[in-house]
Length: 375
Ligand code: SF4
Image (cartoon, rainbow, N blue to C red; front, side, top):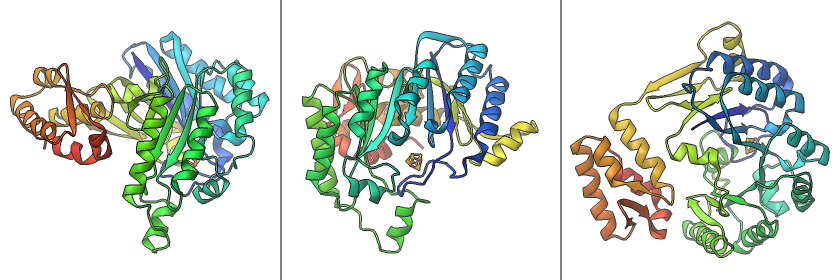
């Protein structure tokens, strides 16, 4: 099993919190698609003939692509890779782009999963985040998506936003639940370098939400969504039975994936590589047959850290047996020593041969990962 990711690095405006690579100049969309088609062909052996079970269009804003460009990319995948009959094809969208006609075009392209960046149902919050949509018509977009045949829909929400009271967040959460969708990604706002929020914080013009308040919003998310039949299968992700995101799971389960486009990352078990985060340079390099990526070969320690970091985020947790069988004795012993300390503090719990984060542990998962890291 393997996956393919397309990065579509265009956004009509930059959100205040976003550190994904994107550009507001969308003049080069046609050229980008041409370059991504060429990259697919150049790297058709990267997945060693493994069956592709997930294709994901992320960004940026994939919903700036028209039907012909999407078909162009998907046809190239079909011609050069083995695709499973039930391949999950996810398309990230901005709510503003979801007209009935556009949604129908996506269905015609055989897109079978939609991810919609709603983030909040409150207009003041949306404005503060720098989103280009407001809360009007959000229910209509989802209804229309269902009407044209989408039965696997995910919505993004953000909590921990400065100034956003619990009641406002819970209202958004409840509105999302009423949409009767299959998957919700609820992320805690992080202030990353290079974003407008980062700049404002440096100038003392932004005061982060109190950590306690953010934790209350997180705890409420887990409790409310669990009561509504959503499985909390990863720190920020909740799915109805049978609707975990295959794309997300492939990152956490160490599945090989091929990332196409500027800034896209790829992984094949022995190395990671990432493309240039600059659309012009990426297209020029592809055009001139020059190198457009950097590669990092993974040491045994890197592989261990990677395994723990990705698995511990999930509700399946980390297998002690896997670590014992696949890594050096000293790595296993150091891991078990930390595990015993974490068990005493009730930050993890044992299940079969695995260890899984407790609720208390989830809330400080970054700290726990640092403890388990082997250097
Ligand atoms: S959050 Fe999405 S829409 Fe906003 S700038 Fe980032 S990639 Fe673009």
